[in-house]
Structure formats: structure tokens, C-alpha cells
Image 1 (cartoon, rainbow, N blue to C red):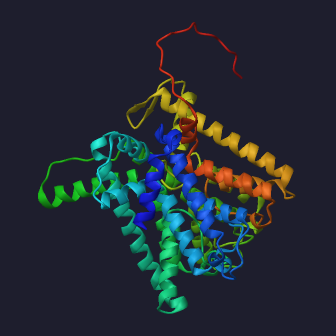
Image 2 (tube, rainbow, N blue to C red):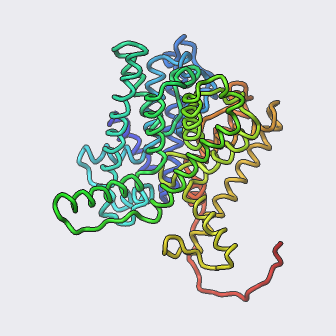
Image 3 (cartoon, rainbow, N blue to C red):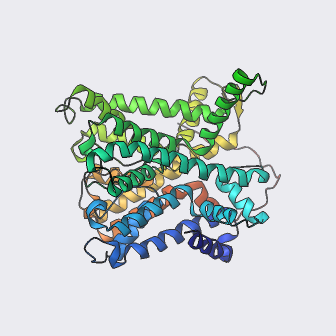
Length: 465
């Protein structure tokens, strides 16, 4: 595995145009692993019946796995062999962490030194300003990922061993779903996702906790761990070092909690007389909580999405568009962006001009970037939906739901993914890719930065409203 990743690194380093800036390097890395994965999944022994997948289906599956989406055009549980399922799991892991991060980690294991150019690329991916902390941050992320996924697999094994019996099958199912949940991929080895486990409290909690952790971002998790560690050291050893939660961490934690619990209550309110009615009250709340968590990041489901009420679908579209936290495996415009825009709107309504959040001033450049991200996201969703209304014969709400699910790398569907045309699949492949690499990374990769000038022009007045 290390040899394969190391070869990817050599390809990246010799890719010329694609390595001129970190954004292009990231794009090239995702494209490379997607194509490589599609080739593997199109091999005869990747399928259970040894009949090769049509290449577009292999490409769609590889893209969905690498972009940790979970939309499928072939049933993962029955269509793929053990080899195919392992490839999908590896693609999910590579996509969740980023193939560049894994390739540099392989170099670290092999004790190879990083060049300045490589460290700059890694600092862009990890959002680390100090190049001296790049290597340590990379190692911490990899180790934390494996530790969380291992703990998740152990906890899931308790449930799956009761379902399959103790053995290799229960072990593989536990590991696969732990990786899929933490990376927010939404791939399941059951044809009905987790619908048969909708009343299983322990399994639902393990899956949702893994999803939440994966959707918070490593930066937020490390910041929380540092604060907790500092408090314990002060209590036990009398140390005086004070570490505080960053404003970014606070926004992510607050708005993630708000969205999860408001989504749960909204889902229950709209569906308790419909799809939830046949279940016990406990299962109703568990299902509502599970679906609220998964609809912003990972496409697992314990209820039939195609049978939900229209008002529920519309609310889910909004939540999927928002997505998870910046720097996480989740897609969407990100909960950080949503929190910033909400705070700015409140500031404008109060008649103020400067945005102050938690006694900290937010620069105009950050606010502009947040609004740009939302506008670009809406543009992608609009043109994606428009295209599919031309090429596909499905209801508008089903198409809109599918497109937003792809953009938010969520993976939920109202049941139309299996029946998409060739053009429809290609469109969703492009949208999933955009949703995973991020709109700002895509813009940075495709643009050539010009030197800023200090020239100031006269102010103009434009009537608004």
C-alpha cells in the first residue's frame, strides 16, 4: 500500500502544470485516485458475478467513494465482490484524508525529508500557517483518524457479531462502516442502508458519533482536546497554562449542535404522523436524530427517503447545502460559512457595519469569501438541476434533492440514482468532485494570481432594493 501511495507522490511531483500551486495539486491528486479507482472497480474480479461494470458506473462509484458522497448506481452490498468492497473502503479512506496527505505520510514513514514546496502544499491542505508544524499536524491527523476508526469498529463489532456471529464477516462489516461513517461517506454493505437497524440504539449512536466527529474537522477536534488537556493538567498538576477554544471552534460546535437538534425536531414534527407513525416513540426519536445527523454529511438512512413529505424534503435540501465544518470530510458551503453569514445579517439588521463575533472583529475579506462561496454553491446547484431536468424524466424535487446531495457530498437519494442517464451520471460526477475539493480550492487552482495594487478609484453609488 505504501509503495502505491509513494508512486502517486512521484506522479504529483512530476506533473508540471498541476503542481504550480497547492490548489492544482489537490485537484490533480483527487482526479488521479478517482481514475485509478475506476479502473480497479471496472475489473471482472471487482464484481460478485465477475461481469465487469460499465466504465461510467465504475467511474461514478469511484468518484462517490473518493468524494465521500455515498450516491450509488450499483448496489454496494450485492454487486461488488470482497475485492471490490475493499477497494471502495480504501478509496473512501484516501478521499476522506486526501491522497496527498496519505502520500506524504508514506514518505514520513519511509523517513524521507520534505521540500519547502511540499510543505507549502501540505500547509494549504491542513490550513496550518507555521511550516514547522506541518509534519506534526499530519502525523496527528493520521493517528487520530485510525484511532477513532478502530474504536468505532470495535463498538460496531459488538452489534454486528450479534447479527452475523463472531467471525471475519462481522469484523469486515465493522471496519468498513466505521471508515465510511467517520469519513462521512455513507456507503453501506446493506442494500437498505441501515433501515433494518432503525431501532438499534447502540448502533445508531456509534454511527452518528463517528459522523459528527468526522464532520467537525480535525482542527476543531484538536482544539477541544487541547483545552480539555490543559484543564486536566491544571487540576491534577497545578499547571497555569490556559488554552481557550478558538472562535472557529465555538462557531462550529454551536451551529453544528443547533443544526443537529433543530433538524431532529423539524424532521419529527413533519413526519411523526407519516413515515414515523408505525414505529415506537423511542424509535421515532432515534430515527429523527439519526437522519438529522446524516443529512448534512453522510448518506446513511434508516428510513425510506423517497416516502418523506415534501416539506421535509425541502428542509433537508437546505441542511444538505449547508454541510459540515470547513476542513472536515463533509461537503456543502460549510457550517462555518453559515454561522458567519447569520452573524453578519444580524449585524446589518442592528444597523452596524463592523462584524463582531464573541468580542472579535471579522475582516471584510472573510465575509466576502463567505457570501461568494454561497453564491457559487447556488450556481452549481442551479445549473446542475437545470441540466438534469433536461436529461432526466424525474420530478423536480427529486432532481434538486439529488443535485444538492451530490454537491454536499451527502449521498442521500429519493431513489433516482440507479436510473440516471449517461449524461446525468456524468453531471453528478462533476458535482460530487466540485463538492469534495471545494469551490474556493477550485477557484484558486484555475486562477493565476496577479499582484495586488494600491490604486484607489472614485466611489460609485448603486441603488439597492
